[in-house]
Length: 239
Image 1 (tube, rainbow, N blue to C red):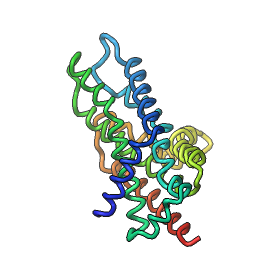
Image 2 (cartoon, rainbow, N blue to C red):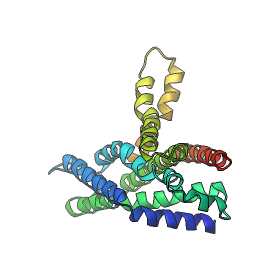
Image 3 (tube, one colour):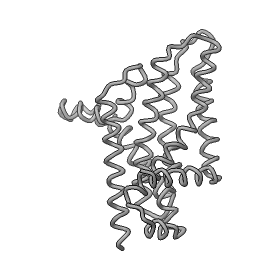
Image 4 (cartoon, rainbow, N blue to C red):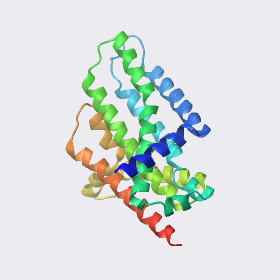
């Protein structure tokens, strides 16, 4: 675990040294500010359900921009050879990269905390849905990062890794939504597709409901994509 945390710290440091990361932070802060401004008005309810939903759509494009470089950049620069020869397992490398990216994502959530403080100044918001919403967003972000890490192991090209990650995320959100609404499909199949939709699983958190099945859904999704990333990295090690 110590080696995994060292990789995570290295990844977090490299993210903060990257100009692209600061661009992502700036765009995310601007996007969240605009979303909050749209929903926040005199007489409006002191809650963040609307902004959280908007931020979730923003994360489809922002989160893959964080993780698109975690492995592909190592291969492009040749630094992957140092990792491969170090006393590290592929699992430690992938998990460390993911944890470092997750810590960076948590830092990006500071504008959301500021939104919460603004609500505290001008109203009396219910802390329950806000805290559960933040937890839900971190779980969604963790899943999207795992998808991004997986995409990053496929190619040395960061742009392709970004596009692959966005494509997979869109399949788990937009595509599943429209498929679950298709009357031509069996009802049970539509219900299953609706359950697999990331946004649908987040909605319970946004309402203040922390259900075990939703937590298992996100943890399982994260585990699956990180496992596939480990296997791809293992296969590339011996090429």
